[in-house]
Length: 105
Image (cartoon, rainbow, N blue to C red; front, side):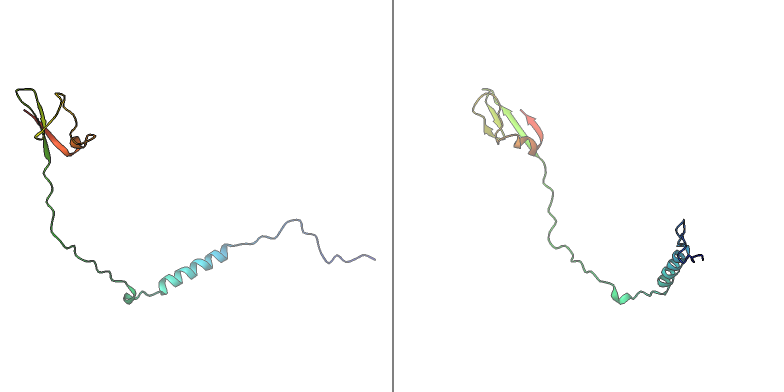
C-alpha cells in the first residue's frame, strides 16, 4: 500500500503582494488629512519688546598725525619720539589699525 504525502514539498516560496496594503495606507492618510480640523486657539502668540535706548552715533575715524620739526624731531599724535627714527607709540600696530588716514607735516 502507498503512503499518503500530507506535507507536499514546494520548490518556490509563496509571494506576498504588498500593493493593496500601500493603497489602503494612502487612503487612510488622505482621509485623516481631509478630516483634520485646525483650531486657532492653539496658536502661540509671541510678544516682542521694542528696543529701548538712544541711538549711538558712529565714531569719526581718527587721523594719525606725524610731524617732523626743523630740528628733525619726530612727533606722533603730539608725542615726541625719543630717537630720530619713528617707532610705534602704542604697541604692536594698534595705532595703525585705529587710524584711518595719516597726515605728515
